[in-house]
Image (cartoon, rainbow over all chains, first blue to last red; front, side, top):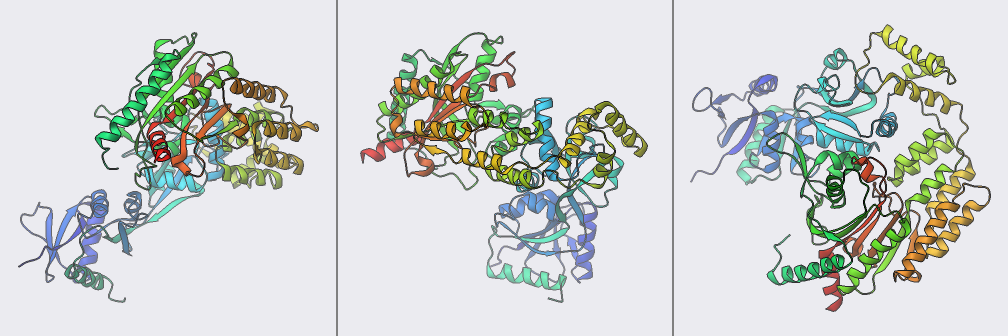
Length: 235
Length: 392
């Protein structure tokens, strides 16, 4: 009887997909699509019992936390944002050395009176009094933002969910500041934002992670170990 | 949560109907505020902390909505819809569900969907009588449901406000104290900071600007900041204005030369917050603390005394109650009287009912002027559990 395969989720598009492909190739693991070229399933040549699922980066974090895939590669930012790392549903196995970017708190450059999270809380208090509403933070990282602001004692704000072009929200008048991901800072700078001195929420990079919620029979554990070992022959 | 059994559903229904009937017999009109509410209203008033406990979602039309985490605010919206001028008194009662996410998972004592039976007395000009009425009626309701041996905890957030108003400190410090009051650990840090080094270390740009500004001349300072931004090619983005930015810089400049919060003031605030005693003794202790030339609390203390008298007239046993200066620090919209009816030693499951005065809320929701208001809510499932537990 053939048992179910280990399902490994890989990014289905963009830089993450390219780099993940390269890293597997360099480790001697050839990933190829099964079925037609535009499909979303694949396998690793020479390793039995593995099925590759090509998914979007955000979906990989979600499927890992639900236990619908066994392991996967996606950004640490998305894994942490899912809340599943903190709750133990996702276990981070190893960073992969690419896709590096920082999730940061950034305010308009014209806020010359603000350089730290402490300033932000004070500004929040004044802003609420002057404008009869809370300071708005635009972000797609709702959970990371809430957790980090709470850690820093900043509470007088509210989140406005932004699913793209977050750096445009302040000019558009829909937010006062942002929490966004940046690799070089160029986009932030070009849009006249500055990062707060203690505004680094997370240093993110592509990460191999496993789901603690998925069904882990012995054979699946063995297959995963084989893959991890190929990716990282030194350990 | 497992589904409730038919028997417990009937018992709860019977209890809630009796409570509603009691409220209605005292001229409280039964209203049914919407379960679905604009998320904005809660987030803007209670901050992001409430989002962590609220079911917030986007509807197919793109509007951000929530399942009401509380019924007071929705009831206030009913009032404003009916009387936009907010010029009449209203007594509302309600009985229905509220919803709160439970981070540790839903349990019997912390359900994510629970029922509240409550009253709101809006527009009553005699505040002490209104406070006593909503408190006394909540107590009467839980007692007539069969609750015995419950205790009352009282507090008054107006006293803290009067205390800091009376301190000889810069207005911007008062603003911070008020803002941080709701978060005891952060408030404690603030006091420590103000009493040691009030001026936080400024960043490089700020330091440079702060040095150049003249705190006595707001206009010139403002043009200095404008010139700086202009020269650096930084546009004035967003809704915070140049004057807001400049004023805060000036505040920081002033902090740099401000003597720290005195040891006596620090002790006064800490002593005040630690007061917890029988109501009369607690008020006496607070009067004592502020007697020797400190802030003048006589008006608020007098109000608190009047409220106690009215409470006693309503049949609230004050000998057995506790008054804590700190109580009510986790409920941001209350402004003065706060109370809780609790079963001692039972933790959260023992918090049967609570309420207080919220004089700022209606105006912040759009009333043309301040509207005095007070209310109370009973957690009816906890009440039933406490009554049945007591009987067993």
